[in-house]
Every structure is written in C-alpha cells, then in structure tokens.
Length: 542
Image (cartoon, rainbow, N blue to C red; front, top):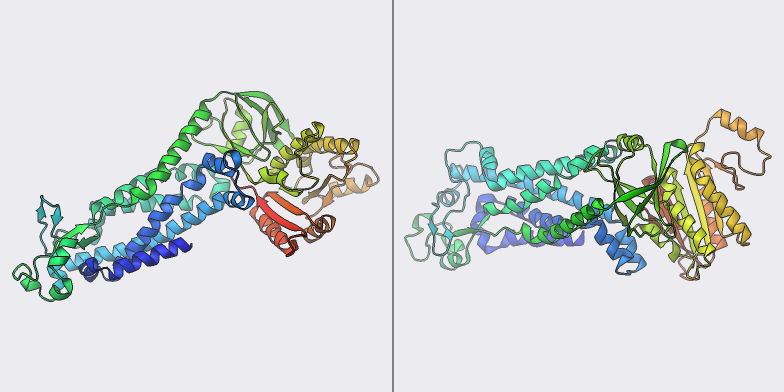
C-alpha cells in the first residue's frame, strides 16, 4: 500500500508540475494527472498480479529450495489474499484512469472544435508535421479531425481507446466471476473467465503505443518557453523566441513492468504441462461414506510433504479445469492419496467417470510447518480434515520408526462436522492412533475432540439409549463426540494452561469465518512475555 501511495503521489506531481506538460495541462486540466498517476500504479500492480499464482515459485521459496524464516513462510501462505488485494487495486486504478481519460477525450474534442480559448484552439490546430530526421512531430491534440462531434468515435478508432475498452471489459468479467458465490457454486465460470487475463495482458502491452498523452520535447522547450509564448499564439513561428512548439508521445512503459512476471508465469505453465503429461496410475479407489471418494495414486518421481496439495485434471470432463485437493497420505507411504467430496458438477462427474487423471504438484501450504512447533492445534471443518489426515499418518510412521528429528511433543486435534457419516472414513485412522499411543505409553500425545454441529431427534434418542457404552456411538472411539460448536475460549485457555512456556502452532483448514475467530483467539491468549505461551495462526489457502 505504501508503494502504491508513493507512486500515485510521485507521478501525480510529475504531470501536475512538469514543465514539459505545460501545454498538455492547458488542454486537459487536472484530468491529465488523474489519468497518468493511476497508470503508474497500474503498471506496478500488473507486475505483481501473476507472481502470487506461480505456485511452483512459491513452493520453491517456501522451503523446497530456500529455507526461509517462519515469518516469511507465513506471508507466502497469504499469496491468494495478496493476489486479491492487488486485483482490487488494479480495479480501483482502472476506474480512475478510465474516467479521467473519458474526460480527456471530451476536452480534446471540444478543443479541436474551438470551444475553449485561443491557446487551446491553437494547440489543437497544430499540423501533423513529421521530420523524418529526428522523428519529432508538431501536433499535441491526438484528435486530428475537426468534424468529429461524438468523442466515443475516437475511443473506438484509436489503439489506446480500443485496447482500453477491451482490457476494461476483460477485467470486469474476471473480477465479477471471482466473487465467492460464483467461485463456489459455478467454479467453471470462474475458471474460464479468469483466463481472460491473457487478453488483458496482451491489450495492456499494446495500450501505450498510441502515444495519446503527449508532451513538449526537450529541444523544443529550450527554444520555445511556454511561460513566455502561451499568450502569443499569433507570433508562433514568426518570432525567434516562439518557434512552433514540437511535441512527442512518451514511449510505452507497461511491457517493461510485466515482461519478467510473464516469462516466469510462462515457465510455470510449461512445468505444469510437463507434469500433466507424466503417467499417473490408480493404486486403489474407495468410495467412503457421505459420498467421499478416496483415490490412491502412484506417479514416478513424486515426492510430497505433510499438508501439501495437488491439482487434479480429468481430460474426459475438461482439459482446462484443474481443481486443488489436499493430500491425505503420509510422505512415508509409497503412494499419494486424496479424498474428494461430491460438491458440484465436476466432482460428481469425476466420481462417475474415473478415467485418466492429470496431476500437478505437490505445492506447499501452511500445514508443512506443523512439525516446527513443539505443540500444535489442528482444526478441520468437514472435508477440511484432509491435511491433518496426512499429518497424523506421518506422526504414526515417525513414532513407528523412532524418528529422532520429531520435535512435536503434543497435538490437539479438533474436527467439526455437520453429519455423523462424515466421521466414518477418518475414524479408522484415529483408532490406529489411539492404539499406537497407548502401546507406547504416550496416551497424552494426541488429544482430539470431534464436534457434531448438526443432528436430528432420532440421533438424540439413539445417543441417550447408548450413553453407557465405553466407546462413542458415532465413531466407535474412546473419546466421545461433542455436540455443538467448540467454546474456543475454553479450548485456548486449556492449551495455554497445559503448555505454559511453549510456542503453539494453530492450523486451520476450513471456512474464512472460523479463521477470523481462531486468529483473534491466538492474539488474545498469546502472552506478551516471550518466555510464556505464544500462539501462531496458520490457515490453508489454495
């Protein structure tokens, strides 16, 4: 934000007070600065917009190649939030830039028609006289015809105007289709319209070559002082102090900003294509309760870490659509698995078809850092439990192999579900964890609480009849299911009490609303004394 403000203010004053723009300001007024300052901010943000979605680059920075600090990794995990903020800034600056230029076109046209003062008319009537020896041109007003009564004609017949309309329409479609309601319910619409960014960037690079905004060139300014000559238009070209002023358009700048990120993104897409072409084999296909499909896949050379995710593509459904899924397998296993819940047209058809699969990834997420903390709180909502399945499996293998590098000494696991059937596919893993910890005398290592947030009267009656059973009636686990939502103040207070001098990593894979609650609780229950309990919030974003 600070850089955006600096760029806006800097370029605003460049065009508001720059001597070479004296005559341009006379034609356009304050709209000149209000058009050019947003353009500079747009160039900067268009340079940034592609970088947060270069997933391989982020994974490389996050830990696969460069081992960066925890603070840096937390910032990299907010890549999509950063992407959205940059997009909002682009939208805002586009609106300001567009309105200012619409006013500019209106004023340029009126000046061409002789509506304003003598100076505006004289500047607009300068002929288009090009000297081939130095490529200097005389004219200032880019509207070269004086019989145009509708300014929009110029908008749709000039390079800058036409490309401006195209990239604005593309931007509107991209942003409106990115709304949460569209993205969740009509993902295909979001996916396809987002690829209009190709048209957006192509138009952006071309947009500046029309040389619409012109300035007095340096040689002309030395010969023709506008402060002396602006009220002597009749003497232009007749007295040595006021030769006919020469103007030039500034060179196109946008390509210099975006060429680097575009090359990086091109390599990103090439790498994705190479991964797509690699053969993927099905090891096992299991239909779990609640219409959750488990796919166990094998791919040569595939290596993963806990909490990472992959993008899946099914060409028989669509060759362009890629959907993210967190892996539920552990790095120690000789396959990787995903659990896919039926949540829309694409997942429904995938469950029905089950043909050739393309895999892109794996990519790093916040959950990779879970073993960097001595104490971790894992919170999953619904199918959001998937990254923690990978973590718990990996812990089981680490204990089995007596891994000396395991720093984690305590895990608190919370799972919130609306339906009882949703617990079933994960209960077997928790049972194995219970048994393993008991056999090793580490029953306190894993504390887990399952919360059922939706039930009916028949379920209540069934629970009441079976209240005396040693195991839970829903999951079969020794730990009984809780009904309703967690009291997070109580949970955080308990964790802080049991770990008075620990750094606690809090990890969420779930809805944004729950993320805001947990982030506030992390701040609330973190002690100002660095020697005491400190909570760090981490959320899955993909």
